[in-house]
Amino acid sequence: MSVIRNSVVIRCKREDAFDYLSDHRAELEWNPKCMMMEKVTEGPAGLGTRYRAQWKGSPLIEMETVAYERPRTWTMHNGGPLEVTFTCRLEPVPEGTRLDVEFVPRPHGWFRLLFPVFLLVSRRDEAANMHHIRDALERRAHSATPE
Image (cartoon, rainbow, N blue to C red):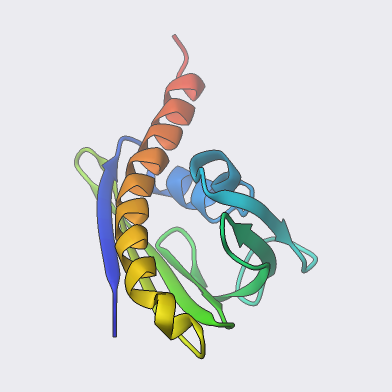
C-alpha cells in the first residue's frame, strides 16, 4: 500500500486551522489543482457529510467524511478508479499547530496502469500543498490580528 505523509507547522490556533481546513471551500483557495468542491449534504460539516469534487485531470468524484473530531482530526474517503482515504490531524505545538496529513491512494481497474506516474506527481503536489496551506492560514491569522 502506498501512503503519502506530510507535515507542516502553522502559526495559528488549532481550532482556527481545523475550522478553515475542514471547510470544503478552503481547498479552492489553497490547492491550485482543485477545480470544484461542492457540499451535497445539508447542515454543517461533520461525520457523513458528502462532497462532489474535481481536480485537474481527474473525473468528478463524490467523497464522504468518515471521521470528524473537532478540533483534532477528520478523514475523507472516496471510491472510483482511484480510491483515496485522506486524513488530517492537528496538534498544538509551541509555534502554533502541527498539521499531519496522510493520503492513501488505492488504484482499481485501468488506473493501476497510471498509478506509478500518479504517485510521483502526487508526492510532489502534496508536499507543495503543505506550504500553500501554511501560507493561507498564516495570512488569515495575520489579517485577523489587530494592528
